[in-house]
Structures are given as C-alpha cells and as structure tokens.
Amino acid sequence: MKKFSHLVIFIFAIVIVLLCVLDLIYTKVYLNSSTRGKIDYVFNSTKKDYDVIILGSSRANNHFVSKMFEDKGLKTFNYGMSGGHLFEADLLLQLMIERNYQIKNVILEADLNLSNDKRADGISSKFLPYLHDSESIKKHFSKEEDFNYLYYIPFYRYIQFDPEIGFREMFFQSIHKKTSHLQNLGYHALESGKKGNMKNNLTSLKPLINNKYYENIKQICKESKINVIAVSTPMCENTKGINYFEKVKKQYPEIHNYENVVIEDKYFSSCGHVNDSGARIFTARIIKDFF
Image (cartoon, rainbow, N blue to C red):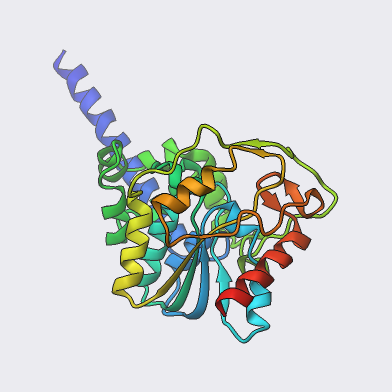
C-alpha cells in the first residue's frame, strides 16, 4: 500500500510538472506573436498613436471602413471583434491604455450588446494566454466564476478553450501564420449580393441599466481624456422590435442612434450587418457628423 501511495504521488507530481512545462511553452509562443488577431496584436505592441479607434462586435468590425477615416487624415484602426461583447471591448481598451496608446477618439458600437454583461468565450479566451502577464487581464477576469481554475491550475485554460487557444492555434502562432483580422486596418468587408438571414427580432432584448462594461469604457475614456462617440449601427428594414433602440436612447441618452441610416436590403449582408456598400454609406455619415 505504501509503494502504491508513493507511485500515485510520483505520477501526480509528474503530471503537474508536465502541465507547468506545457503552460510555459504555450504562453511563451503567445508572448512572441502579434500576427493572428487583434488581441495579440495589441498585447504584444508598444505605444501607438491614433486619431480614431473603433470598438465593438461584428457590427463594428463590418460597419466602419477604416480607410475612409484615413483618407480624411485620421489615423484609424478598427478593433471590432466578431462575436465579441462589451466585456471584451472594455478589456481591449484597458490593454491599449496599459500599453500607453495615445488615442484621441473612440467610436464604440453600443447597441445590442448593452443587453448583456457576459463574456463571449470565443473571444475572451484569446486574452487568457496573457492572464499572468497583464494586471488588466487578471483584474478583469478576477470576478468570473472560473477565475481560480484559469489562474491557478497550470495549462487548464489551454485545455478548457482548446479550439480557441489550444495546440492548433498555438502552432499557427509559433509559425506567425497571418489571418485576415489585421488586414484593411481591421475593417472586414462583407460582400454585396450574398444574403444571410434578412429578418431579426429584438423584442426580447432590453438594455441593462448601467451596463458595467459600457460604463467602464466611458470612465476609462474620461480618465484618459479620450473623446468617446457611442453609436447604434444599422439594422435592416425587416427588424421586429426596432423600438429596442428607443429603449437604448432612453437609458443612455448620450448614445447616437444610427440604426435607420441604412435600411434598404440591398445594403445588407444579413439583417444586422451591412455589406461593403452599406458600410461606406454609414461610415461617410459618421465622418460627416463627427469629424
């Protein structure tokens, strides 16, 4: 029995050592790559200067044409992340401040995601390789239910979120295989003529009172003397419950409502996402109104 106990302890120790070694290897790879996505691009960067950055979900990523701002002499990058929530937008801005970015204006897509204050695992997990190397990331995740597992158990985060940050992604990071996320100054154009679901129903959505991540973004901008421009972005004309945007305006009167600037189906790839033609109309309006 004593020998068996020693064997179990030995195997357990070997497993812990192996997990620690794997954790160190994976993390080192992520700490030396900045070509795959917007999160590693920011984390592994040094001070940058921007006239305009764009934050939000796919409704930011697909709706703001960065080059149109640049053509007006405004140094711009679209940091919108498809699938992301305000949890991730808030944290990405914190990382930029942590990296001493100088930012004059933040355009924040603040509409549908005001209805939740949850993280989007598919995007938030991409911050986790840097959990031990950024106070902002550590603090942001510290109130999550699984924080202790993610922070204290070696390699747990890489196993738990293997599709996002596991072996395949680590390997691509190690060979610096690029993606399209950083092309076109972060803007991702959707093709005209390709139609997804051209109906949407927002009747069940309700903006939260004092969404904590939205409020934190505003506070960061205030402290860093950044002008924040919060906007609602276009929806197609077949949207039910379109009065959701009236609820947003009532709850957050500082948010500029542009939900009906582009409505014709020909300008949409799906009900909640304009195509490139629609994005150019929308971006031109934003530039005209604010710059």
